[in-house]
Image (cartoon, rainbow, N blue to C red; front, side):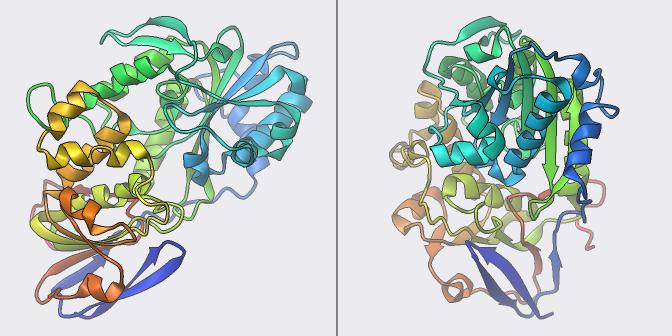
Length: 431
């Protein structure tokens, strides 16, 4: 069977010929609904379609100080600025809240500070120029609001206390928390560094040098990180939440408003139906793109493509991965763990000084052990090889020596979004 795979690589499209394979199948998200009128969708989400909640206008009055907690620039794929612009107009014109009473709090977690341009993108020009738009600082004094059943001491930004809090986030599969968005905008979003550390260190298996099997994409039941986040967010008095789901091309597809936990859960189910794809066997070869720019801007962000793609390849199989990384590895905390890896002490070092970037690095290295991986990238082999992959700089080099004859192949064009799920009921069956 001959086939040409067309995959995004940064801002380019790369064509890869596949010759002689027994089967080639693309794994793509379901065709998704696109919201035709975002203003009407926002109005419905905060009024008659509010989930497990009264309408927003019954929860907030004209004299209330309002804090809108919103995800940072790394979540710009959900175009939160468009939503915040509409929300700002609604609060000001429909409810009568003075713009001076509204603060936009960017839920940075431990991420870097936003530039002024990024703040304008995140909040949208309307609120950026009319309201206070501030970054959360996890190292600044935070307010304690309680302790979870797992012992996490929850401390949050003072701007979330004594004000009407609206949480706006994008719902997407997440490698640690099961799904992003919702409660994650509270922890880690606006929590102290110590609160974040206490929560995130639960990503490691307590009994062996491995990640915790209960932690991963789409996993919520018994996921210790998710359950701890959920408890932490419940300690804060959140008035309302808006949860955004987008298509693979970045168009708004779902907008779920209402009570924090319930509205977010509804958005997770919608995300799951669109992006989780059942497969009946693990392939000999998986060819996966992280999705092109901006999803492959760096290895820290782009590794999601590989992590998802590895779910579809058999043990000892082969992966070809496209992840351009024009910004290199991204977070300095990611590549800082190369040295402990080379020394053979990565697990013990991470347990002694847990960081989010460290865990994502750990998970990348752990996952790469499943199959042989060659990556088309600008990352140097001095970084790639210790992690367990071979870096090449051209499509020709990516295919060099590859023999597809008689093999079953999956092609995943949007690896950063699509989550293959093995159908255990029918192992080994060819679709």
